[in-house]
Figure 1 (cartoon, one colour):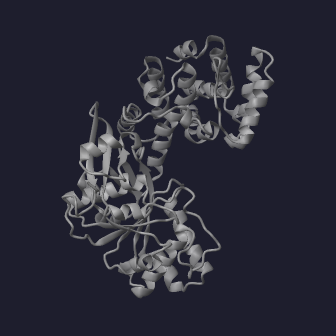
Figure 2 (cartoon, helix red, strand yellow; figure 1 turned 135 degrees about the horizontal axis):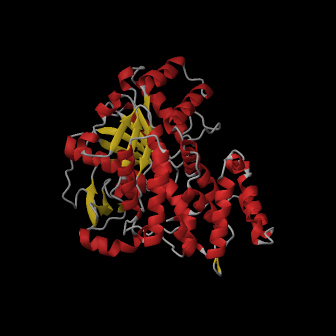
Figure 3 (cartoon, helix red, strand yellow; figure 1 turned 30 degrees about the horizontal axis):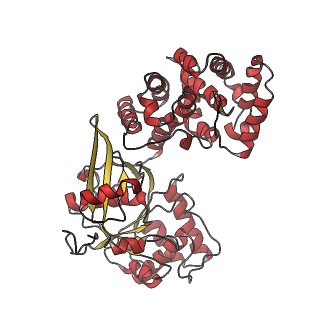
Length: 482
């Protein structure tokens, strides 16, 4: 049996279009649409979602074939136990391809009930294309399409302030809404739109910076025969995600009133400043990933779950977290500990097989953004070098040597970093030269944005750990860190 509103026990009454969503991919359907569906069912939010396909080739035809319905499986650890559950998501009312239905797309601007715009068009999606024109059907870029839609709404409602929209992007770029607004205004200037429109954009619309967090593996292709048998219908848009979810939205109180996610029990935080939440995620979740990769992989482990549950690697990670990462952060300690416990549970998710090599890409730049700020903050606070973070730094250098015992490691980084590490390891003529290797890498300010040899004690700590890894092997060297 095919999944649609006729074949399945689903209310057919249409919900008013309250949300216009740019993007039909797995993340938005497992995150934003699931939240709207939850609010509809728990809070009478009455939010219908129209999905706009942001690029020429996409999935709205498949979405429309199922009347916007699809099944979400949430799988992970809750209260210490592995758990899996599924729900039918009913919030999406239909999909629009602006490349073949541009008039229908532009008509959404005239919807009285429209209030929100959500998007996830990848990190490259929020970009300015100087070739976009107002008369294009449609514009190439997402911000171009949005500007044309907003201008249509502005003219149709004669600049009425109450018809401004709440625009909440989910793209993973810094200050995503600020950047989107900047480009919209750039198009207004390029297209010579009237000053009243510019004023309406600035005063009647909310552009809200966000931080989103949920692991979404996506379509479970290998499990589909058993899923279809369990569900009793054929669903071509099944999506899997973890239980954990966090959405931090930088917005005024008016937005929180209109989007009552917290009242529906969802982990949505409205704040005046998104910065500390972003720092918490980058330093703890992303930072732990980055230090785990070289240490655990050289130890002989291939996957995140296996590493966290290993007695030795798991202890190393927990000590680095509790004794070096959390103390470096100026936030409420209990909140940090709760977030950290959630992160470790997420790493232990038995339903997600996360290979260490898959997150080893560009480890140098990841270390610079995710771990180095913690290392420097700890050193500034205590006057000492955090030994486990320095050990992870050394392990990363050894990882870039390209060998795990006799096995080749497929190291992957920018060309300049690859050349640096290749030449440094090739120049090694004796074990006494580890200090020279470390000194030269720490001086590579193209990555670190400074000469790290200026950080008192860092060169010595990294050199000592590198020597220990080389002489003892990772299995013995890591024990000295416990």
